[in-house]
Amino acid sequence: MAEVYVFLADGFEEIEGLTVVDLLRRAGIEVQTVSIMESTLIHGSHGIEVKADLLFDEIGTEAVQLLVLPGGMPGTTHLAAHEGLARLLREQDAAGRRIAAICAAPTVLGQLGLLKGKTAVCYPGLEEKLTGASVTTNQVEICQNVTTSRGMGTAIPFGLSLVAQLRGEETADKLAKSIVFA
Image 1 (cartoon, rainbow, N blue to C red):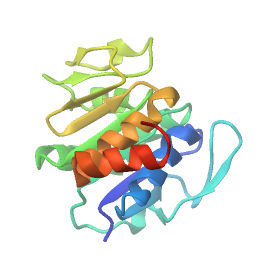
Image 2 (spheres, rainbow, N blue to C red):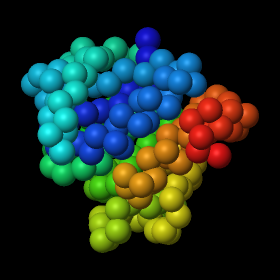
Image 3 (cartoon, rainbow, N blue to C red):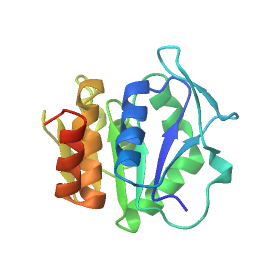
Image 4 (tube, rainbow, N blue to C red):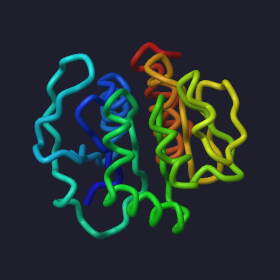
């Protein structure tokens, strides 16, 4: 069973999705990419094709530690429209398990009411869609079980924050040094 699912849809921002997968796997975290489309072949927003590990209907019913939503357009629109993903996000939040979203994808959480009373960030110009959140301009915000980040340029700090949450600060610091980030 995976510890983390990263959900991919046509039009996702490749750096936001793949950087997170890369960093988590380097930290020894079991990650599976999940297509919410009808195929495992996903077309990124900049023409990079990625093969997801699983289709949404193939994911297990057991709980995972973290669900991740990369941004990008129209990837975020596809994520927001997927009823099964919405149900899964609500269940994850209700159980207090981790959810993370970057760039435009925190708006999906806002639309579902999962940011009420929480601090969050998103891609500049989309802040009004973070319904109920206190919005900052930090690179990454961690509030209770929800982690949000601003965009492609914050993908590494976002990924490292997820590593720290799942494996500790020491692991995240070692990883940052190994990729010449710190």
